[in-house]
Image (cartoon, rainbow over all chains, first blue to last red; front, side, top):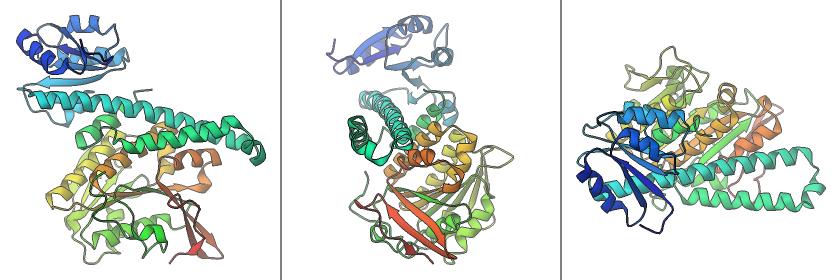
Length: 191
Length: 227
């Protein structure tokens, strides 16, 4: 087990393929494997950060597992692993990324890394928005002198400046059109 | 942050301010001012200026006609290659439909200003067109955020702006977004401002259009007349 608290769930009915993914990822992440969609959903009762979901499986299909993940509003990123090259429709279905088989090690690692970076960006952006909103509320209700003397207000402004820097240091995993569309699609359904 | 040292954008012809003569690629600017203060015209001019220098020009319009927006940009850019011009029309009857116009420009239809995914796909279409033409510079104008916050909640609009800015940053493009200052309370405006790198305020005094820039230096610039 890697000494990281980030968990990747591999849902894949071919044991050899699943084992390969585990080998590629276990240095950096905690990897757990499910052999079917149903088993995958059970494992999602524990905290999982990224799910690699095979599209074609006996029993529950990848798409069915995904819609279950979304309807339960589970806070994880889902990459679909597929044998066919998909188009934007796949992203619109609610996947955060896709990988075409055969998947290469470098590609798998960078996809997982990218999805985790996007999650971090999301939570930073969420916090940034809350802070900015709070600042606007305080400014609207307090006078200039009162603001000058408020420690809470100074701390808030400092935190906002920090978050601004953190946000500008990362591209949030938004490097190309696929990342961009997947992130926008997640805007209104992730709170 | 791509190509940050290689080139900058010069908007000083339309906006005679120091910081705007060499704007870093990836910069997103909010343009605020009263309704009808000429903000849209200013953005079309900025895009037209870019297109006539062989840059891509992308208009996202929430209340006007996509084709008319393209024509407004072109009126500033006689020498423009029209295939570099795209509009995303967010008040269309249809959704996600691309129409190539006779002049080679492209209008992408989106059925509502709150259909962020469709707007995003329209923008990526415009990126692809620029890429096919080997164009790596471009300007995007969104007019207006005031309409967007009527159709979607403020938080989603805020995040959309930030995500779009990130994408513009990775593409090395710049973005300009308008907000009608007389259509929202102070609180809303001050929140939306924070999704951007800088802010240009526009006002009209005795029939003269004036502007100033905030957020590029430590202090706001003086008010200056704009043509």
